[in-house]
Image (cartoon, helix red, strand yellow):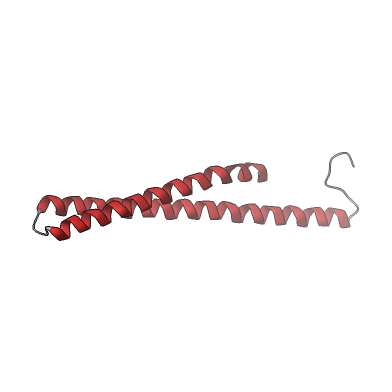
Length: 103
């Protein structure tokens, strides 16, 4: 199980980076749309585009936060499992047993 979690860290790291990059792009697009709208606040088309870009930015930011949380949770679970393994090995060792095969 530990190896499975460790192997998933790279994929989750890439996912977090990609979603963060997408969120930044959406935020930039939102800022551009808002600037265009401020130049012509009565333009309904620009208002609609700005509203859509704001929605995209919000959605992408949420995805980025979720990906980061998922990665952090996996890293925390890995550390907890490593500690549990070390504790169990220590207990076995104190009982004169070994956790390594063949001993």
